Length: 413
Ligand code: CA
Image (cartoon, rainbow, N blue to C red; front, side, top):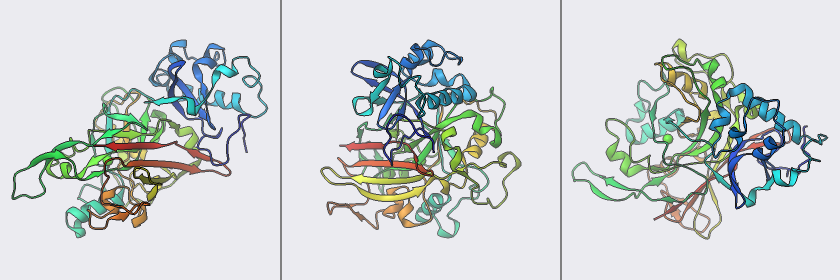
């Protein structure tokens, strides 16, 4: 098994097999690109200044900037070369960086750094691609016999969301206010949501796509995807219920979404791809694929009440998706929609088949009818003020883990 000369703890999210990209700053360093290894960050601006990437087509400006979009503009092939070069430099036995005078400046401890949004997000799209989630919601709010709407198994349902309120892990989230109308017989009222929920999702971040008017096939999708983050699509269920007819979610979803700050590359996740469950009925030709596009990523959600220890409320897995990421990108572009570097596309709530694997409080507490108990004895139907929701995830390799770091947000009133 490949190892680094930088020490990495056994269950670290960031072994040399991972090398995810992010944007960090310290009191002495402006926000800039870095990669995570063990408990450290490698400052890529310092490595570039010292000539470690001189054989690659990147420029000084690509590294001296507070988003990854400039690096990503060089596309999949060159970003893979950059990551491979970093792995080479960090590999046990390689002394180029290990014995270089710039090492003290290039190595930053994660506890001394602040993480920022890794990319300037252009457009954000949210899908609805977990069959178990769609079936649960359809069962709760419609007819259990017709839980899935007629289109659901023919296309990956989605909507265009809002990128301006996607924030990195650790950002406080203010409880949103809005119109609420629990009964059809009364007029709506205005106030803070009483049904604040999380949605456990994964999101992929794109490279530039093709020109407007062209489409990306499922088997071309990987060329246009940089990597993944964990995505908490915070949702206000009472606001959603009143506003969503007939155009779908609006203010119930646009007040905040939290992401884990490190982009785990598709390259790092390559060994964890599997064929998904067979799709029935067969999909239209433009959604058919040859490769494996389901990814085995174990996911866990905890609620941490103020001054209490975490309570795990869900264990799910990204492999449970019905529609995979390649089909999502293919469907998104089939009408000619242009995709730009830094666009973010979320999977939809990832629920598994069992109660312990549901990806939202709406399902876990089944519309508030089955509250769950926290470690401090208090009950939850939805998320309360001063609760922190923590999502974590990793792909399990042979002797290592490809992890994502924390995706955490605290609710304030
Ligand atoms: Ca969602």
